[in-house]
Length: 390
Image (tube, rainbow, N blue to C red; front, side):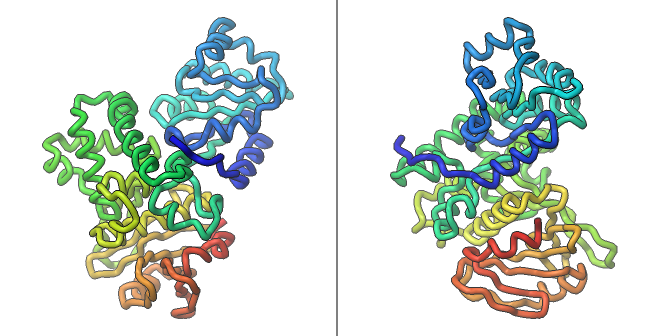
């Protein structure tokens, strides 16, 4: 497959460098093929400080010495695909606790129960987690956001010179994820067809409230099976879940979370969309825009999952994204139309939640004020809002 050179990721480099300065161990976690290895290699000071646990020679260097080869290394030590050796985390704990430790350790791993458990149990208080996904609009340039929305942010999908090759890569990624990663992570007995139907059901539920029981009925499996597989997909950074924002008001809050396929390129592939001409006519067009904007805002502002919510009550009040920050409560609505306006539902939500500011993000050209605390913002100008959420 032809694809261009990698995109510089200056903000991610800055975050990793800051983490290495503060913590003895830094873990870059994210889905497969999102650029973890490419990013980690930039911090390797010399060849002997790099270990790829999917490489037979590098793995042998560690295993034949029972990890003792790490004892004498100085500077930044990079261990790629650390989930391949869960027993490594105990060794890193010992090395991290050395007084005046001569080394800092940068590990990468595709999100899985194994690496999450190893990091949380063995390296608690010693590790800084740096989540990594596909490209963001500030990395590829604000004028290129439409292609990013269509193809998603995985490097080989976004950077492919030929549209058909980008689509083929995404199809292959989904098939590999189903047959290897998801089956292994979930230890499932579900067939390939059933697992694909689950992903397609999530795609068609993108931006909607998720119900385990309804999904189980459609798929012909148990409630617990759906719950377990969704938890795996959340942990693998494939799906985002927005819980409802709870506040002490006398309203009937919708309690089911909303689900989103994190990468819109994968979403569009699961929805059987081949190119940009098919997207505007699809029933999930508005939901696709919503998910794209949410992922971009959360990722670019380094907002934690526990700070992100949705708000919806049965009386009609609704806010797509609510972010809770020390500086206040910020609301976001996402409209795929040309000239969004304020609505009674949105104004009532602003009053109920006493939000600091609310922004309507749309794919237009200019920003304009709609109320004292409400503003329509063109996606290409989103960068000016990011400092508010930092």
